[in-house]
Image (cartoon, rainbow, N blue to C red; front, side, top):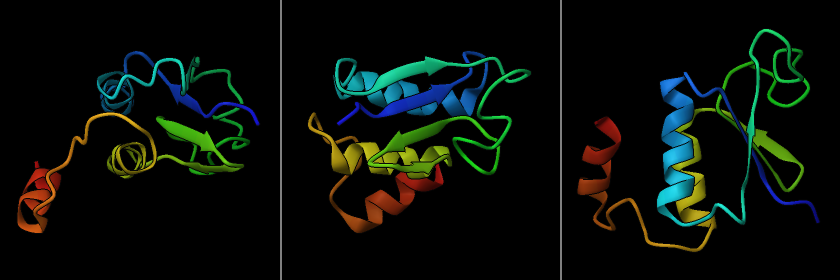
Length: 97
């Protein structure tokens, strides 16, 4: 099974959120970082994430690309310290930030 791939553009703040999540959880060896050129990429052609956005995570033959959704997915599906609070009210507040 191929490792998950996180497609980013270094200058995109939304991609940086997912990239930081990957690094804080210590997943540098588990999730491959794939920097792309937004002007000339498979992502732009819709082959990775149909909405043509970064970040995009390809894992278990599925892809997603909303940064907050990716933060939750990485936090809930990979090992490492939990980044979101357990309390539902606190979690909702954290999501609003």
